[in-house]
Image (tube, rainbow, N blue to C red):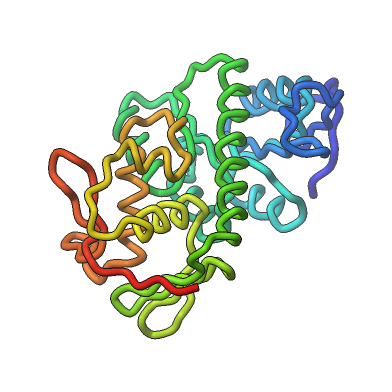
Length: 270
């Protein structure tokens, strides 16, 4: 069972109350709720205590079982996930998270294969990456940066409801911007994350035109990502949902030396 714990409690798993509303970032009236998943109890307690001191509510757990139980009972705004969880693989936990929700995830690791871990983590849907040992102030800044990106995506996502062209059709697929619904040629709904949706709209607004990575980063509002080729990760995820064969794409094709092009005609109706 999960219960609220004060900062002077012994080190163990649980939720830490925010001790004050300061530094919550202004993203919502309520305090942000952060899940810290790490098999090191001292690390969990250190992060949880620091975040609590800065107006956030922190849940500390050691693995997927605790996180899944908490996700069922509470609203979590962001997960801090260590990739080395003893008997569990953090990548497997990340896959489980992404199968359920697009909640932001910051992955952490002290392993030396930093670049490989970062690429794999971003491909699996992580939003940011920080290497141990890290400063707690930097971690808090990254939490705020991820939340800013998420808020910007949400604002653009909601604004899309009022666009002139409400529907797109391409290659048997349909996207309705009024309902935010993507359907495949069989008529089945295909879920998209906010970033995937924004990227697809950017392509559909400029079909058969080469688009630079910089343009797509701006269009999808993920330009604050720490990984400078993060747009490639976003394209990879979208290809996996659209393309019959992502290794030989017919919709989103690479334009060598430029970026990407949405290669098929697009019909737009209001």
